[in-house]
Image (cartoon, rainbow, N blue to C red; front, side, top):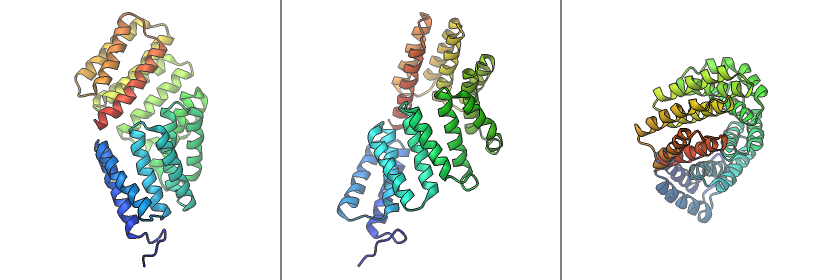
Length: 295
């Protein structure tokens, strides 16, 4: 007779976990159809073979939640990630609970639910020892500052970034430092420091171009365009839009992304760019980024 416990998961739990990991590998590799097929088998095992190990179920929910998030099936992703966090919490795994809460915060942020995103990330950071998972902790602190800035709470965001200077210095790689300069640009723009914001947005955009990251370069350019609009510098939006189109035409990007930046360029040529259009283009680029990764 097979004994089931969190410390000794049974054969079906191990098989379900292995299949979920295979699904996650397919997701990361861009094959969402195969990932879906693997999860159909995982759910068969959970449902019909009596998989009850809470840690196995928590990890399965986490991995499937990541897939649904990438598929932009946000309600399903929220349900799965919430249940995963609850199971990890019940099992006493504070770090994994925090990890899932941070992902849930990202989900809320991308849907525009900033207050929920802030609340969830704060809850995650309460559970996360800074010295045990320093990179995860910095990621959480960075996301919290970003969400605060996007919610208009720029002074609070600036305070977090200032408090975390030592943490950022421990991670000198471009991925982290470019996102820091981008965040600082958003904060400077919100605090009424347009010259500093412009410098930081340009520095960020140029850094992403050097890294071959066209999507984030375009998103930083849109932040720069918003700054120009607020400053009444509408004529400077047109060359910015032309640079975005040239960047995307030189890369293999999803057709929706190219269509979005061309729409932006056409509006800039007519001097009809508005903050609403910038937000619309940003949303279309975020969606196209996901499609490009998984097409």
